[in-house]
Length: 157
Image 1 (cartoon, rainbow, N blue to C red):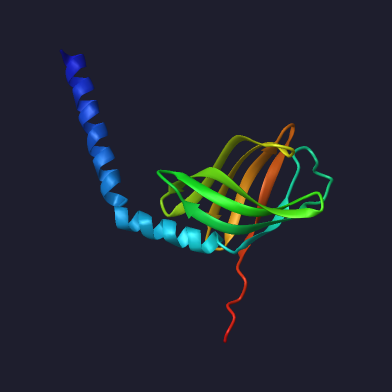
Image 2 (image 1 turned 180 degrees about the vertical axis):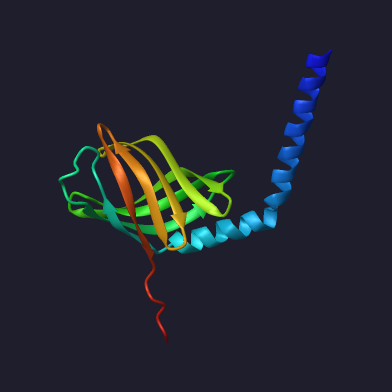
């Protein structure tokens, strides 16, 4: 009987904590954060560096990703369209990824996504202010990535 009461008490605590978490993440707050994140990335360039695991003596390599658009789909799913160079051509490639929130901080999560002709990718990238940092894996190679989110200056007419 004691065991049953303990289980019921734990379940009630779990439900209470879940309800409090839901209240602290009001729908309007979440929608505002998502809208701001989409605006921050759309038309931006992620400009920074990447490292290779196990290559301490190799300097960090410059890295740039041009984001054409970032759009929320349903739940945690987003479509991020990036401009990528494939051979001599630049192509807009839409990729559906997960975006999770740690308080007010978005974290992109991509797991074992195969892009034909390019390989399989896994990454976790956190955005805070105008900076990003994360980890990446491409087949046998992996490492870290970090930098800033650059937006073109608004044109005055």
